Image (cartoon, rainbow, N blue to C red; front, side):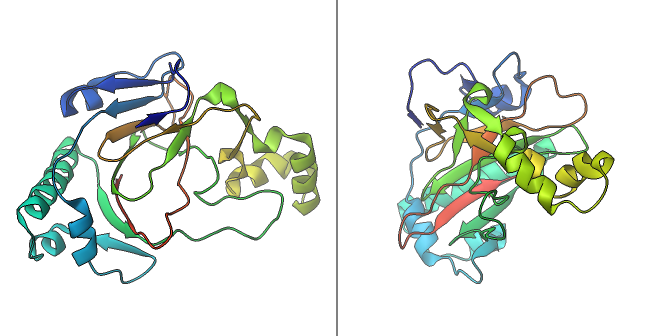
Length: 232
């Protein structure tokens, strides 16, 4: 985990899974990290998986079918255990082998893909869980270091030009197209990289949420390198 500034109070660090899922978000803290230094050869696991699309979901049976070295076996057991823990908790974890996500290039003034800083939204009380086992890792931002894009005057004016309908329907238009979920970092913003092997829990915008949702983005992939990512 790479911290670009020394006074991060928007995330907490815990030492086990129980603390990760039971700790409460509060005040400005809307991300929690189970900090881990994982053994095992995750690169070997990635090298033996088959990429079918730009994003390929990997199932436990796919992992179990791999012929691995001792260190590759250790890595596989860690992944399987993480999937089981999250499933037992009631989450729906997905393990993805990633070449890249689809880019949103429809407009030159606003992007709504996952490479743009954004928050997750849900109609039910939940959290986003993330762990990058191999490859580039995501970034998060403190909420006071970013601006909601729809509140930036020049972007808002261009969105109004796109909107076909009455002024009263404009806010609904922003929500329906997920424009309201995306953020622009301030010029002096200091991001935190989530690093490899750590299991993160991020606050989601939902009814009853007592903190602001966590602003995060997918990384630009390293050239010629796949990512192995657990997400739910």
